[in-house]
Amino acid sequence: MGLPYSLLSDFPKLETIETYGVSSQIGEVPTAKRAYFIIDKQGIVRFKGVMDTINPKMPIYPNQALLDGLEKINKGD
Image 1 (cartoon, helix red, strand yellow):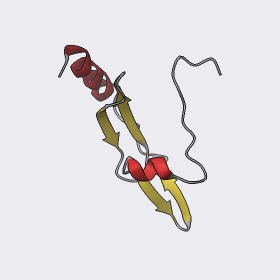
Image 2: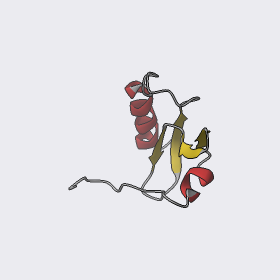
Image 3: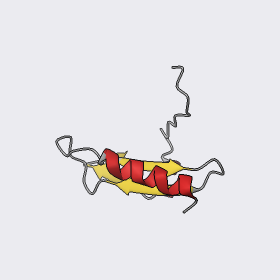
Image 4: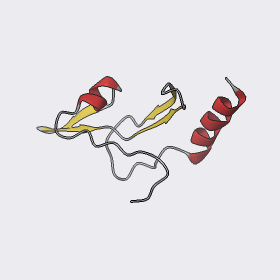
């Protein structure tokens, strides 16, 4: 796709959503909660934002919260 970052597919084992604590169920179907992570160049999770429920009408995580997380990382916090 030519993206400047990596994408992850966790299907079918779903190990990553378990490790990151975002696993959920819709009836019998295992799925992941909508979540946002900022991971630094050393592979350390510096920001984690998880939506409480799976709801397609729920607004996405606010951009400003993500930008604030990036700013903290850039400042060395």
